[in-house]
Image (cartoon, rainbow, N blue to C red; front, top):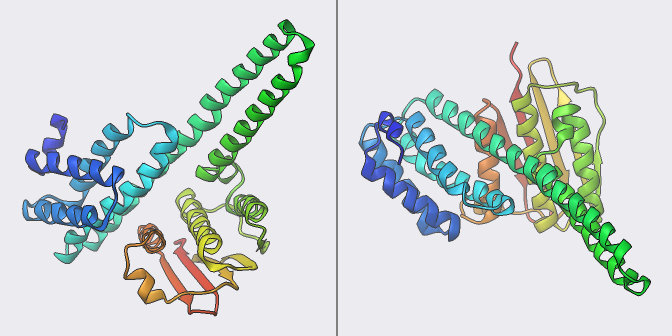
Length: 314
């Protein structure tokens, strides 16, 4: 690990173990690798390391690992890394370290991860898209030199290139839509609802309200929350209709996602380590980093409602 990590107060041998454990979790995630993260966090806490030191260690280690991965692999790696990091911080909470320190660490980590996601989305949209554009030009040059009988095969190639271009654009928008930064939360949610509805054939309605622009961190947190809620509804709920509401109050903003699907036992799901539970727990952590909260209301056969509440201050 770099020498500058000496300032974290985390022993070098523990830094090495953390890097090895994180690599293993990114390649083969399991309950055992998450337990290993918690154990390493406990060792760091006993060594009198602080939460921000853990943040720095995690980010530096992750940056080294991600540097060897192609864009699509990096997306999955970022999600798994967030799970691992959350588990490594658990012992600090158990030792009753300052809640303000934990919240600051979570906010810092969310900002780092969102920045990494933005870079991946940019690479997919601009770099990979640029390569596809050059390939289109090369195919056009080739078409001028070939006999007319080969035109059909070139047309098939162009069609495949068009499909690749559409897939790259879709993935780039899902990772970090530029509309979120340019126009704000409500237009971004309408775009997300349209894309998800077209793919899933579910009816998704975004209720239009006068929300205006919100602080960037709040817009990002609520967008990710709706993204998680829609993803769960598509994968698990077997819903027909989904309603998304955003209400801006004087000192807070509320966002509700309500579906008419199968519902679930909230306590049972959150007690597990399945993908659905980890996604909801990660969302709760993201909101808590902004002093917000997540309320989940559901029961088998009664649909699901996610209520996100984020204070605006002032």
